[in-house]
Length: 115
Length: 113
Image (cartoon, rainbow over all chains, first blue to last red; front, side):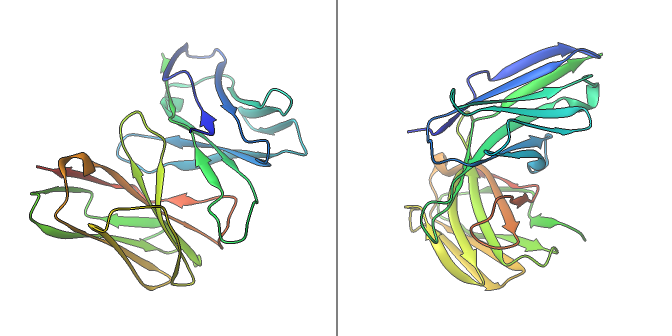
């Protein structure tokens, strides 16, 4: 069963407008959330993260919002630029038992920013 | 070289071949990972090594065999693969395990004929 879900496989946005990428999770033990960005022929690159003690984290044009009650997070990119066109992966982390893997990924959303 | 590097970047092999994927991290990290990325599926963790010891093996078929000779190098040995094993294989590293952030290599695009 998938614990991290990105229900929109693709998103197109005009340059200069806001891009909003969404992610839902099911495991209430998750306490740390990340967004990765992936260009073709490259590996995922860490973009921004948020701890569950916060509801917002901002880094330049990128802001991640966390709604714990809804088990939902979103990544806002504003203003969107053509270079932002990539696949964005949401990931979630939980400290459960020692030695267990704690990073779960969504299936990704392909963002296309139209010039 | 910086970050995490992987070779080869592309590999085509027959079902009876034996090949190896190589990963090297230049970040001084203590943990390394192999992931499989298939189309429309989440990244699947295959193996985790921490301080050169395997700490996670997520029910991966024995036709995939990892090797971690030191904390900077990780191999994935492949033999008698199936066409459904065709995927992007990503290597990652992190400072420690468990870790909040993992750093990925560019991946090896594997095609099994």
